[in-house]
Image (cartoon, rainbow, N blue to C red; front, side):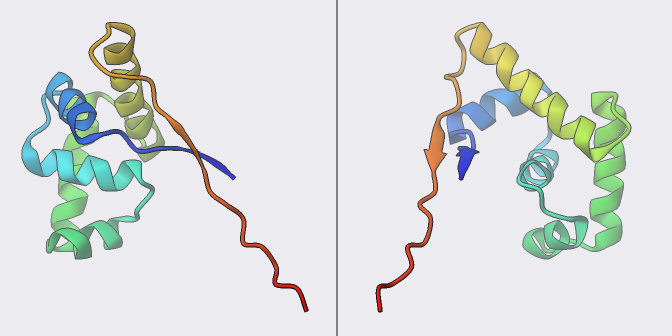
Length: 104
């Protein structure tokens, strides 16, 4: 299976800066970008589910989006814009090896 590798720390920092994200917003966006549900984000960051939800709602307003999928697309679009300007590298593609059945 092919998957796009997550951005490097420097690339994430560039994206966060271009979108003017706070440190906490940045942490939440990274979890959402990875496909984690709110409950998982809440647990990982040691925040209440309500607080995470509030942060997400404010991110929607800040980034002018209405859905989580749009938020992820907005973050990726910011990355592509940086890459086009030469400020970030293109994402690499990693191949996950399939589990090989054992011979009997």
